[in-house]
Length: 271
Image (tube, rainbow, N blue to C red):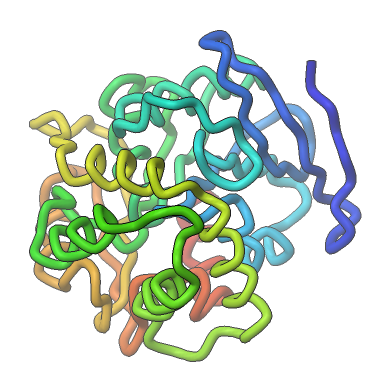
């Protein structure tokens, strides 16, 4: 059963919970009509649907927009296992069935971009386009391996200084302090065991090759400290129908740092 609860920040946006066919309960935010073309927004590592809090209010209300919390993240259920990219992608596909979304543009940031890639690999007919933010062909680089070593030392409660340093390392331009404080607080809610399982699954993930013949927009910043410009370029070259958009001076989170620029690019792609 889906239980809608209005969000105070935007009357047109609602929060909901749905139990998938696999038994996992996902929390998500949604706005716009209940039917019609959809956009699904997938957040990054340790974040939640609130990661798109600077994006959703800027989107036209005639668009159906759905932003789930991945299992283990935000207000979704925290099963003891099942944190590989393929598990998270399976949840997204089941969410589409549960919400009667026949197809959608899948937007993924960082970890969410790899989930988006896996959704397109497994169900290309349900994906009308991919928007991959702060992404790469694979996640196994020196930055992520160093992060994994630090994450493997985490214990509960997860250290506030570690989370703050992690979140602030992703931005190159100022982001409102209240937004960043909320991001840090949200990340600290995720237990250390899930931090460890998720990053292990992320680094071990290998997408299918060749890539599916879907439209793709690879968007990132020239100052991304997680995935280099060369990695972003390489990803765009793997998709036969991809366009690359690099934003000068922006870090790993274009939708946080320049939400208007991000939304304009997204709408141009969707429309």
